[in-house]
Length: 198
Image (tube, rainbow, N blue to C red):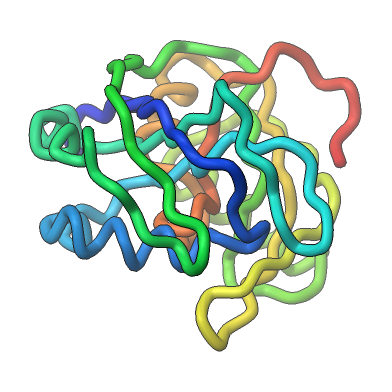
């Protein structure tokens, strides 16, 4: 598979709907027409502050991170300077900095979905997927998650992987686990330690 990289964009705005992921994906598809053809693109989402009455606050350090093939980095940077219309609250995209994937023995994704409902079925499907790609790491499931994607509801769990070998660490970060990476699901990042999951 293609070598992947994170592009971290500065963002300006005051607030955004807490359940913004579907609207963000639709806007990204308009701005980056090639993105549908890249199955491992991941939208890590927006760093936001607290949520109140369905609205998330955007602070001065807000950013948007996209995990894209390295060969698409220059095309992805075309987002710089654009305004993304996300419902009633647009955001302005600033400059981007590239961040290579780094080896980490512990990885975390705040939302992983694999089209199952019960936790036991979720874990079985996760084990099967890890086995299919040769990943012998251990995992811990956290709190159940749910988000809206248009008229659909997507359900899953937070997941931490630990005791990852360097090769496994980079593979999982590059390809993700489960589905719906365009909504930020199954996209793993470095995590310093296992201290319990929410």
